Image 1: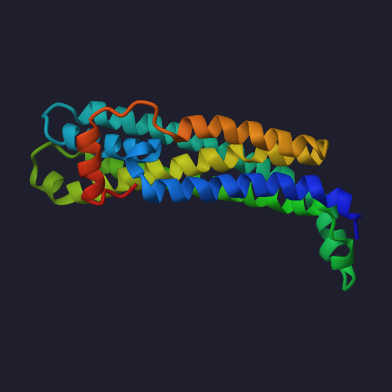
Image 2: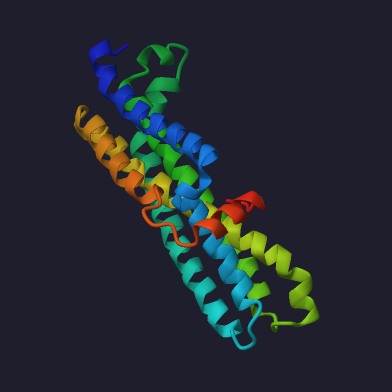
Length: 228
């Protein structure tokens, strides 16, 4: 087993990221209108309702969904390449750590970081791929003629899918960003906590809502239990 001093930076790096995610979830639950996640969910829903109410917006809606599909595809491609490279580089450590009965005695901080790295890349890949799936199905709804019977019948499903796709896309991007502190900790152990604090500080600025347009409408949307 590695000495305790070798575990400190790895555990600090992971704990900083975990504490931030827990704090973010608590704040999201207690005060949804203060979070960008809520605003973006309401924006997507109002956008979908708007393009579903005006004739001639079908092509514009399809172009917007196509741009989102391309963006999510890029994130999933990066995550897939990173996952394949990570598995290739981590294979010797994984075999040494779990390849025999004495494997757990060889469990090291680097192996822990490699497992976390692979988990983050896989989560980013899975979320991005599912975002592409939901965007794709939403595109079919957006292509239906406005005010047609089919459009009205599938409107609720399209609105739900655009919400889910946006949420999954944000998860894919976030998990990809969380890879950076893990990589830093693998290269220079005590650079991990520093990188984690920097990444968390940057993400906090994006996750909090600096300006709140339509405060009352946002609160009303939250009260209607819009899926964020």
